[in-house]
Image: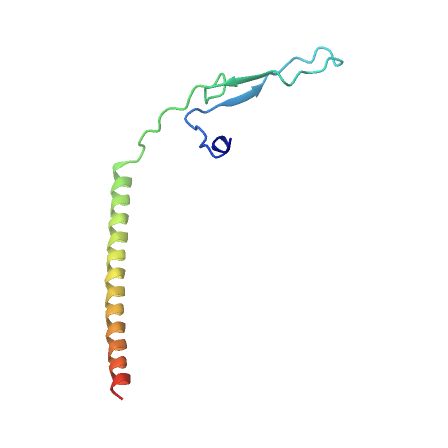
Length: 104
């Protein structure tokens, strides 16, 4: 029983529930909302499925994106070098101060 509670759900299918729309010809008739259809398709009825997304970027846009990515990578590399140098200097100063404290 606990295995059923903690079992992973199966998300491989997309299921849509839709109640059937009924004509209201007689206002005294109670609508049965238990009449439910289950659809395995993920698109609404009478709607064509969306087309696969196509690459709409132009050559200029691609070059601009590549240039921006290169600039950001360069800035990150420079920042990394700066932080490594600062860490080295601080470690060196800490060691020198520790030698002064230990030497007294």
